[in-house]
Length: 310
Image (tube, rainbow, N blue to C red):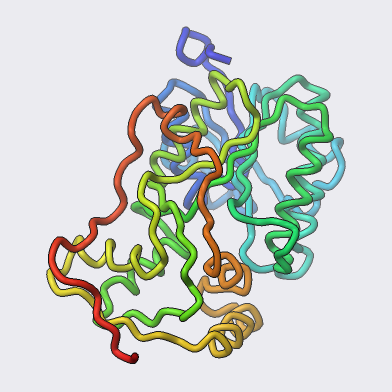
């Protein structure tokens, strides 16, 4: 699969290539000389490609539940990077269809054609979690393992980067606030990584593969969500924010309300993850990059974050 770097121009399909993660993957693949095709629900919107991509094809993951449904999308394609994910279901776009059944069908189609498939999953789930979002990611991974395809699974930690939307954009906005509302039980550490680093790591997997198939990816700094917000705020403000501890019952209620109303990127799944460490078991990011991951944010050099409420 090193053809992009040795003269052969590989054609890579990136379902979800118009999204936050997808755009960074597209840019990294194009920088390596690949011909990138974005898969999108709205191909007309991206008729001239997305960023560094050359073309766009129509994909409706919730309808592509059998290997044969991928025939047209995979025509002329040499490898696939699946970046599709939904935070909340809507209509026929259910967690099970988008995160489990469609990736299973895609893996079967890739196996039939001998294509490498890199699948973006989520870091931090286990059997104790009750979030349907996280359980569907778990089921999707199991389907890939059983597919017989040439697959790789990447599990990034929380992401930050330019052009972000959803959680990354929301955290950057909240970081500017003079007061940071923080759930009392959100003591779990996260290994925030730069989205550009994720794109580069995925491009390496597409072109070179690896000696293992499952890749937990994270930055070098392990921080709680409160420490991450402080690190992001310190990029722009000398004065630290005040912490406002939020009772767990109110956080639980808020998470369910956000899911019900589709308000803010905060969800019940996030609330589950924030209560415990959500870091790579073995961080594969440095080895895939061949360098130290980029730092995200900067911790204040003087003083500590004060609490507005004891």
